[in-house]
Image 1 (cartoon, rainbow, N blue to C red):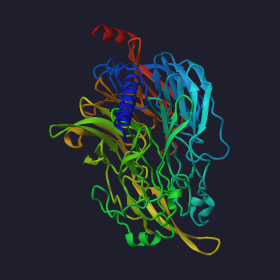
Image 2 (image 1 turned 45 degrees about the horizontal axis):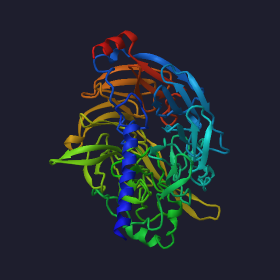
Image 3 (image 1 turned 90 degrees about the vertical axis):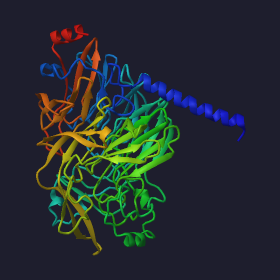
Image 4 (image 1 turned 90 degrees about the horizontal axis):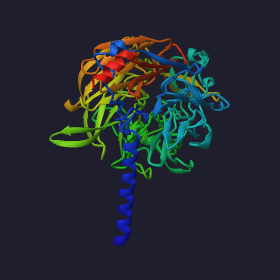
Length: 592
């Protein structure tokens, strides 16, 4: 390579980094009154630098306005607020634009209902907004750009191929009671995550691959070739042209046949049997799974994008997929320009339990041993927060457990084994929030002990096969935990709750945390102590991440309430927005 050519490449990299850093400063530093990105800032901290509503006056908080979408279903969207407009996705991938002061609907995009059954339900976790465009990923795995002024589609592209082979309830024997329950989902292809934007790219990933059969109140892992590799892809924001694509699984996915996790825990694998099966199952990666549930985080300075991946396919039934099943159940870092793998950290090689890395990663700066380290916190389904050096993936420490743990890596058996946190426990898709001043990460946790049972059935040709069933067993609950990142993940405080924590957390500079709790309640906690300071009853489950924004000197807190069928929380269609009464706002503003 010539010196001039090398200098040109270096200049190109510097210009790219400058463009990303400039975009991050303009769209998502968390310091304005907007909520411009899914995590507010590109690192996903979900911390609003607003303090008009604070510990001293939060008890005065009252409804400012409520908007009804007319679509009663799981409502998990994070509203995006830019200027005086709010943009949010609805169940089934519809999108609405509202006046953020009043809730008046400005326009609505109705997504055509795809033919056939949805793989994973109607949930959509939000949109992205950049340069006059609103981007939404859809239940039928498309990425659509809408005109932010009118809601008219500008382009519409497929992110992944049509739905692959899936599990069927008819594969279960008639003697199994699960065969008579309503099927709520199975392996397929869709998009649940809110897209991420960076520079001139819009980035999104697919879900549903390796989902497993979902009879009511259970998950079944059936042997077979279901699904396809998970995908994260980047598109040109102006045209919809695919720029790069990363497939989660591929040749060589068997890895090193790790007997232990990277942090030293015994996985109880039968490695000789797996190695013997490799010759006949070498192509299993083609159906390897690894869904992407949460919006990635971006380090603009280093040009890196970080995301978690889901379980391998088939779900739990692991006999046909020998090896570590790279890069499922992992934290992954890619080069943002090219989609090239930079590093990965597999939390659970050869996952047999549904231990997705499903919660969004959170970027922060860590002071350790006199050094300032660019770090990443990854809450896990296992019940720990893993903290990494985001430059190379090195594990810096693992937090104290924030939920009870039992038999984490016990093998499913014919008698059944109870495991906690379980398949839907620990930190699921719900986002955590970080207060950088206190160095506290606030994690919404789920305690849902699960019984894993191996059952046997006969095929039509007389051969027999085994499948795995996971069902909740025992008391369930939730926890809101403050993890001290300055003290190697010790728990500063914990609030135990009767219901699972599903939805996400908002942190504010007013020393507050906002989150949904239980079936119909929205609450504020003191972020320093965990004391509940305020709550409000609504008409549905508050199972979405809250946001805070400010317009004309008035701070608002907004949250969707649409329920959650998995946990039996009542369904609704409301977006609820709260603020201080006008006299209190005037007094607070005048005091500055």
